[in-house]
Image (cartoon, rainbow, N blue to C red; front, side, top):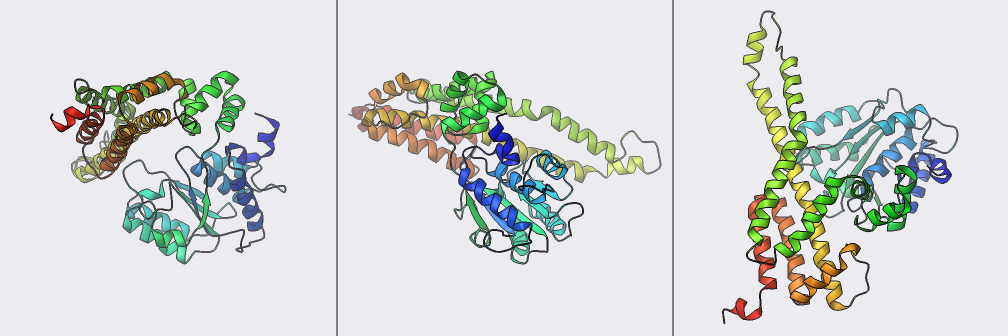
Length: 409
């Protein structure tokens, strides 16, 4: 780790967010004087594109607020900083949704916790990652705390944007907004060299094809399966253009996603079920044990529902990465077709982008991008993955079909 990163303390984990870091440092410093003025607020909203580090920024800020160092807040070395960053601080709670949404039941529990005084830290801090997944009831429950904040409580929300589809307008209006930007390729590459020990060449390449996503750059540089997944996504740009391969490719993608999701959560599911059974008395011999197990059907069903929601979320996340790569490929082809000098999303695939551009018009490539975006939207509206992909490849196929075929002449 470089001296500069070490001197930044916990904020050394933030990549390419200088203005945000300065604002959070000022707020943490103001909080030491119990200030609730322009620098400090009891409710914050961190927004930014995937990979920008919005949840990292929120966690760094939580550490800075709890920091016990006499120096600048967020030293990264005191017990408060290290436990906050490790997720073990008693007065910092992170809500990380694993399913499709954050239910009102879970949020009410957090609201009760938020009303308490901190036990070991300076503040009671609640970090809600993916706050755009709050149900309407959960958002309303949280709103009550934000509108009438208890003493020594800070709420940190993370969401992609301030769009009403991502965040309640009323809830947004009660928060101080902290927008993060997409990190530059250079800053991502620097992180990969300094923290992961990659060569400058490896780091530069991974950063250039990551789409500004620090975590993905790390995976692409170190994980063969991540590179294979990207290659599969980019092949779909060509497979979808041909009627003979489009639907087979879409079907194969769905099967691959199903298989990956099943493998990803198989061990965890087994562990969760075993822990639930043990908590209900499985293996016990005392009176009432058998009755407890027989009466546990409702709890087992609740666990299965949570697991099903997590599986659905996992499948959607895997598909979304594919669709983002696919849209980027068509975007590069469109840039090539128009003679644009903009930076390519996939700089290692310029030949392929040129080939796509040669097969259809700029309008056709724009149609392809719109088809991918429509597929993402359809999945968000609970359309089955296979149906959404079939509709997407059908529309893409139309864009690559000769005009006389489209008109039937």
